[in-house]
Image (cartoon, rainbow, N blue to C red; front, side):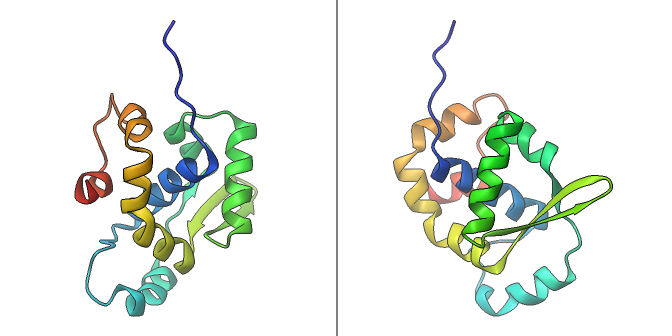
Length: 130
């Protein structure tokens, strides 16, 4: 049986925020992003379900809840609950955070990131900063 690599809250946060960024189709390196984000987020009605995030990060319900609670506490995401379930949206602070720290996360967690994406290929954000 293979050894599972440990993922901490920062790595999970990075993966979730980059996933939300990719759903929005935002290029975090674009010129003037800071000024465009509020309008992008205002016009965006797409989010991800909690189960989509759970599947992507390959985690159980309890760990996914902890990660989302952490991101809400940091004001990096908002979670809307309705009769269908939970929908997760990034905030401006969350997008700016992941933009500013992707290179840092990639340098510290490169082994874990490469392991996490070994079967589906490395995400664009990681390839750009590496």
